[in-house]
Amino acid sequence: MFWRQFATKKAAEDAIRAIIDSQPFDKPFESAFLSDLVVERHYFCSRRGLRPSRFRKLRGYSAYTFEGDFSTAAAPRQIGWHGVSWTKCLAPPESDWDRIVRAMRDRCEPAKTAYRQSHPTCENCFAAPSHQAHHARPTFHTLTEQIRNSVADAAISDCLAGWDWFCAKNFVLPEDHQITKLFDELHARATLQALCRDCHNLTKKRKLQANGT
Ligand SMILES: [Zn+2]
Image (cartoon, rainbow, N blue to C red):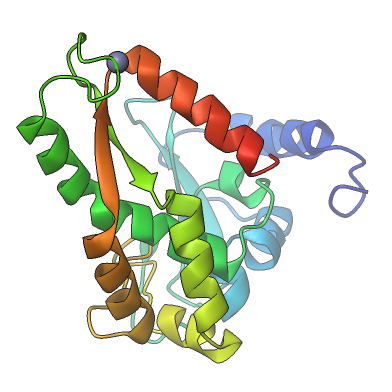
C-alpha cells in the first residue's frame, strides 16, 4: 500500500484533489483526512507532531495557494495560517542526511556562480561559453560521503535540531556546527571546473553512472 487505503500515489492524489477541488476559495474547511496527511507525512510537521486543524485555498499564481491553520498545533510559538504543500506529503521521504546534502548544495552555490563568472569559457572544450561550474575533484558526492563517514549519527540530528520550517522552508546549515565547518573546509580545497552546456551534460551522465544511480 502507498499510504493507508491507497494502493498507489495516484490514488491518494485523486482522493486529495477531490476534497480540495470541492472547496470554494478563501473559505476555511476542516478535513481530518488532510490533517492526518500532514501530521503523518509532511517532512517537517510529521517530526514535530504538528497537525493543522483547518485548511483554505487562496487564489495564487498557480492553481491555488494551499494553507493549513496551525494555531491549535503544539508549536513552539504562535503560528496561524501557513502554506503547506500536500504534494510534498506524497513525495518519497527524504532522510536527514538528504536534507543536509541539499543544504550543502545551497551553501556552495555562490562559490560556484563566482567561479563560472570568472571562467567565461568552458575548461573542457575551450570553445563554448561556460554554463555551469561543477565539482571536478572530488565530486560533490564523494565530498559529502567523506563528511558522512567522519561524523556520528547524533551530529546529524543535532545539525537539524534548530530548523524552523515555519521561518525557512529549506533547511540551512547552522553556521557554527561541526558538519558546516567540515563542509566549508573540504569545499575550500575542492577543485571546481567551468563547463559549457554540452560538456556539463556529458559529465553529469558519467557521474550518475559512477554513483550507480
Ligand atoms: Zn565545453
